[in-house]
Image 1: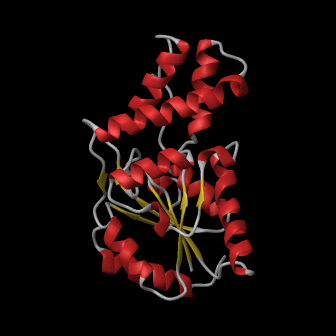
Image 2: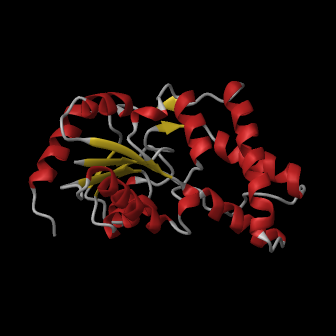
Length: 231
């Protein structure tokens, strides 16, 4: 079984530090008009969020500015996480990671809209070692969220010499749900992020939970769903 984890709103809460870092970096580099007002953040790719802001403020050449912005955003987020912004692992997440790690035949990996380096900062701030995941697929590896889960499946197959028998994606937004299911994953959605239960149900998640705190029940569902025939 391959278990794919989203980060923000699923594994941890970064208390808005990511959005704050994006805005600080953007305003330093591109001026006071750089703003996330009206930009949807939850479940989306960091480079795509930047493209949306650029479109609003009239910057046309994304590639000319992306690397400089990315480096500055990393440095600012590192400062924020070392200072006033606390990052907390969400209920049940670490225990579920631990329990899955003990199970033979289970591989855990990341599928996130974050850049790899900022994903690592958030995980470390929450007390989660990024190296405990077999691999990750990150926000700069696709143009849209739907491109990330297939990359994760391909990466697993390249590492193991065969496709995973069963794949579950854990996320907190409709983007996690639709992208995961489009790639053939079952999706467990939690209400600990930016999308409420009704929105997650409407998006068609296979299971929606308030959080991951009932770890035994989550494990039972994961194991039971692995025995169900794929549609």
